View 1 (tube, one colour):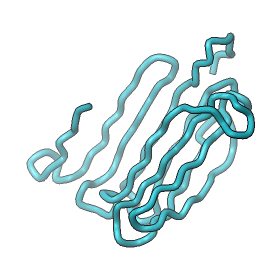
View 2 (tube, rainbow, N blue to C red):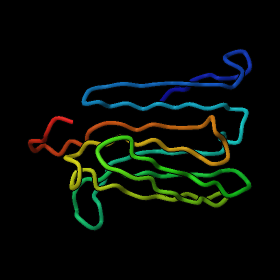
View 3 (tube, one colour):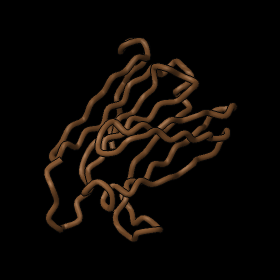
View 4 (spheres, rainbow, N blue to C red):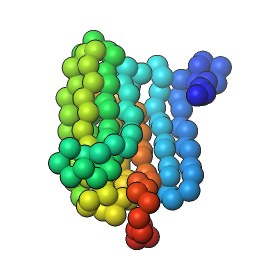
Length: 136
């Protein structure tokens, strides 16, 4: 693991960090460490979907603050829609997206929070299964 310093002497709390890799892998983190989003977290992982057994993209949304936070997960490509989750103080909420079953493994989602318009995280890539797939 590593860290990205966005303290007073390094951008006054504002950050915009993008990480790229193969197969359209992209993670983008934007926000302001002095605003309400500092208590929010979103992580992505891959695990089997309970309904299909196929690899799915799982989001874990966290809230270490003292008030409920509304998260919105929006599909940028490969499927349509947005999904809203309310996360209570000190809690996490998890949900999954069947990207292998529905989209040949490709995904592109942006996560935002209602409490801080500067905070967003983008998750883009391809779930590898070892079987032939289509180009995204």
